[in-house]
Length: 275
Image 1: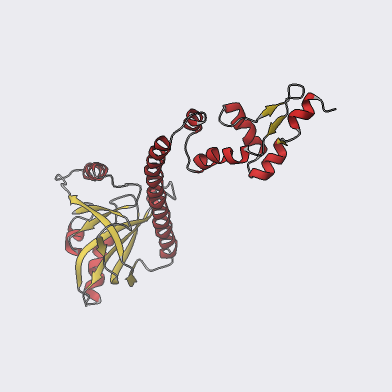
Image 2: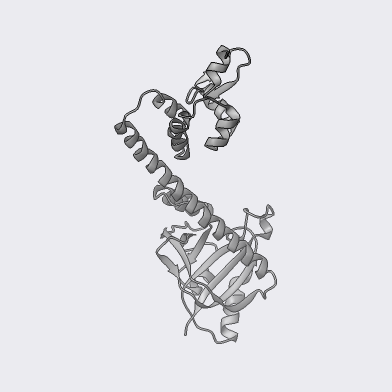
């Protein structure tokens, strides 16, 4: 004759067997049981072993499906014993919006990693280049800020903070590299530490710096510090009879993201050469 335990477990599966059938780890099944979202059909009082009915393979799909949608366990627990198609439909729509926001965040993070990594790569390569050179530059997308307002004798930081506040109001991610844009080579030479606009390098923006041949210069130092680079750029254009066109861009290839010595920040100054 079967004992009570034998009768209870004859058509049931151990937690290991149910785990192998469902693909759900045993520790996860134990956690779901303790949290109250998916309990075994039988619990042996003598040894506390968990046993599952083969039919529970169907019901466990409810839990695993919602978890795969990243729905919190507390929400699943409230729906375990009673739910309607209307409730689940609403829940799926809500979770869809949450997941879409996460996808957008991950996409932006991927763009940020690529952008930062590319600038650092350029910075490491630029250390082997002459201080001033003519070279081809790829197209660059960026968000252009409003015209800056530098007070006579004022600091670099005030207009920069104003730009960051402007960007925040428009939900622009200021973790992307921020640069300075001068209307021309002449405006840069006259006041190199006061760009006409700030901008953030961002691959999804409609503003673009076109690809082409550029006059490129490099300088070491903190933000807005360029030493004699403006004068050297002017001298270089005169000696090589170069004509520049369009705005001039200041980009920091190496900055606080990869070094703590502000005197070693590496800026790139570039302006397109007229055809």
